[in-house]
Image 1 (cartoon, rainbow, N blue to C red):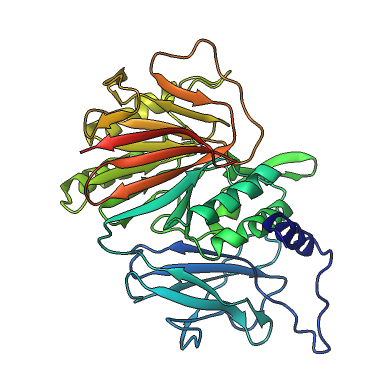
Image 2 (image 1 turned 120 degrees about the vertical axis):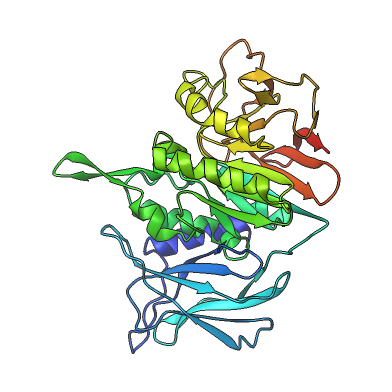
Length: 402
């Protein structure tokens, strides 16, 4: 069975079609929508989240370096008012770095997931690969991008905001999380918050803002979750909620976090990922003037190497920028520190946006197509960004050299 067929079957199951009936004891309540993400230390921590139809008396992850699963972590139950099932979350601590672990989640009372595996982060790899795209949703191209991530075998995946497009319709979250489960049960899924995570629901024929409650409950990110940081090898990854960029507390957190990164001698590559782009040429949107004014001085101050974003449904890449000015007009090779490279990949799976005409002077390349990025981060040498279409063909390759 193909991944597309398997994904469709999973979505039908979530919506109650073809679902296995309970046994005579009424105990068929197995975990679905299994997903993993890093804790604060990716070399030693992993978080597991899942959902069952109804609450179970116990919430457990059994895990180990073999399929004997000799260790156990007890989970907790995050809740929110509009949940569509019983969520569960557990953190695995004191893991060994650069080690493959096997795990399953669930309970004796309700049933267990299949045994899956993940690998903890390597402290000092010679190089590593991660993938990224934003604006995913539910669509044939969204499923293809799940396949693409699995094909690339990344250490982890960055989702650059606008995740499920539930927009308040909570069962859409279930369909989406079933769609991505083939990826998220083995690839750590690290997300940025976007405007579509700031949800509304209809109450008495009126739209009521419920905010980010669904995303906060359904995922387990490090730190404050909406803004957090993690290290992999010699790279530090920093995200903030660009849907709330005017928040002075968050701006101060971003300034302090980037300052700390630049003081840390272990950090060579400083990468920021967020949902909204600063510089863009999407028709009807263009540059985000407010975000540029509020955030670009902070990014400039600490000479951030790379900023990844979504929001605009296509691929677009700027020349390196500093103080709103292009610092190099080289086609696809740039020296580290000469400017911040801004890249938009909002082609995760939703319908595509048109560009303004003509192309702005600060834009180096753009293409209206769904796709993803494969990024290689070295211990020594050049950071390489491969921008790929959803069919895995190459749009462009960019290098940031030492």
